[in-house]
Length: 51
Image (cartoon, rainbow, N blue to C red; front, side, top):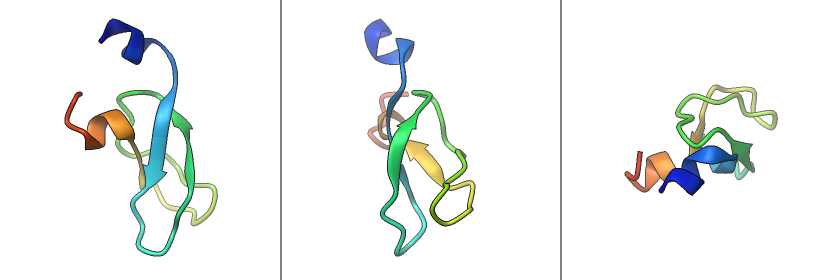
């Protein structure tokens, strides 16, 4: 688990209709989406409930 928290992890925009994905900090839950302009990027680890 410590290795997962060390580097960037996949993240996805949660805005309906926006399919942007990027790499963010593992604990990110309000990252900026460059595609739609919202603070709606959430780390896959947060979405999976691992963090």
